[in-house]
Length: 235
Image (cartoon, rainbow, N blue to C red; front, side, top):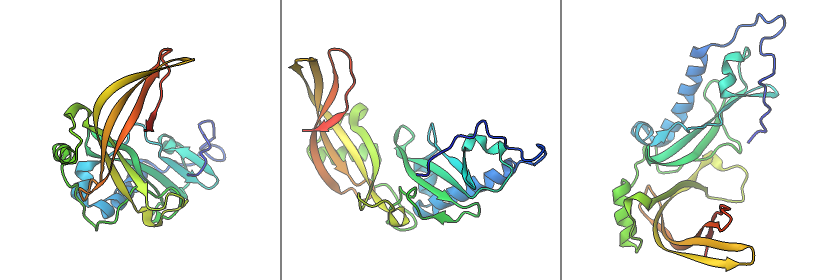
């Protein structure tokens, strides 16, 4: 991703301050063109039901050598070189993978093939999830992971086909839906405190085909006696 240079203090109005900004209609057209990129990959129905605007998007605009946060667009007086967008994808609005889709476009809507491009799949011009949350819970159960609805959805993430590559052709990869069941809790005393954790059984599914990619048992650290938060690690 291009290094962002904040221009909050940059003087957007050139010369004597009389240059005219591009206006809301101009930026709305660019957003429509970005949406069209996503629709061309997933289809209109999928876009309407499963693509969401991130709560805290990192969208930005490039004008020459400068980058502006999207929120600063009303200060820009020159046509942009490119615009960067992010989208969430989810089973529904409550079960979402954050900012999996990202890309940059030129003002005319042309997609830029660079390291920002990710989050797409190669299942044709119109795709569907294999099931809804309940259906995926049943699929996980059939494969030994008996999920409870409240804790079932753990993650929905895009994974590149080549994890070592910097640029992914056409932004193509695959998605992994992580369905989980909390199996038990434990603790471990060490010299610097008591660590608390829980065992989590996980079924990792392809949300578009229903294929079971793998099953795992994770040891999810919950903290230690001093209250330090920890992450998730594999047994």
